[in-house]
Amino acid sequence: MAESLVVPPVKTLIEMLALERTGADLFTGHAPRDDGFRIFGGAAVAQSLLAAYDSVGDRVCHSLHCYFIHPGDPAKPVLFRVDRTRDGGAFATRHVSAMQDGRTILELLASFQRPSGPSFEHQAPLPAAPAPETLIDDDLRGVSVGIQLRNVRLPRPGFDVETLPPRHQTWFRSQQSLGPEIRFHQAALAYASDFAQLPTIVQPHPVTWDTPEFQFTSLDHAIWFHRPFDFTNWHLCDMETPSSSGERGLSRSTIYGQDGTLVATVVQEAMIRMREPNPLSQSILDAMV
Image (cartoon, rainbow, N blue to C red):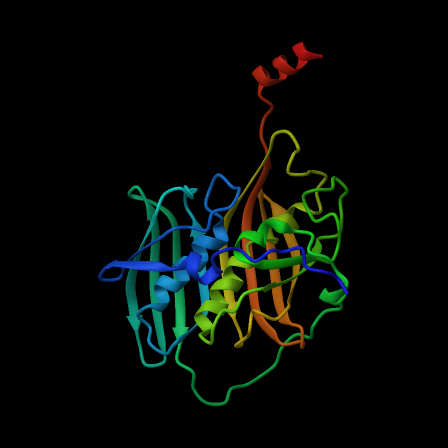
């Protein structure tokens, strides 16, 4: 059985994502700190979702759509402004703007639904994948927030120049208790869902994160929550990238519980492109040879 390399952080993910109310439908939060120089996109999505949840009562989020507008500074607080776009009988819509220094870093639109009676049911089956217990914690980006990540194939996308088929699989879960409220399980999944989308888009191309002149960033992120789930259990993120063109690539993911239940679908578009070589940088390199 594989051993965990993840050491639980001092604070839980729920504590790190916590928001402080500063006014009517206004909240302030701080992104979990990591080694990055900008706020991790998944953190901004998760905190925006929690801000939206504050005013919807017993409704549960079934979908959210985000645009990453500007990079955020993890050293500064983030202001979350919630607009109550619609309150219907079964459904409610919330618009959240995440801002720093008066500049928008993320826009989120989320829809919430009050649980009702029986519904039609069908789902795609769980795809074949090695069990998470047979894999290792190879991606330590989730360590600071207590999220375990186990990639089915190593090295993971972005670290190998070899071109591969446009599909990747990752198991992930929270090592920490998230409590009984579905909002925190959804927020944790939203956070974790941003780890492997862009790398999957890169996988069919002969580049790595260190390739000179390679430029990349996430543009948007969408999640559909299909069924309730417990994110302290293992979940398979089965990803594929159906297209890349026009300096943009798309990742489409289905997320399953280990029991085969389809719990969410995630779609992300990212910018991936090669910049024109910098003549000054090249002349410096030539002079060093």
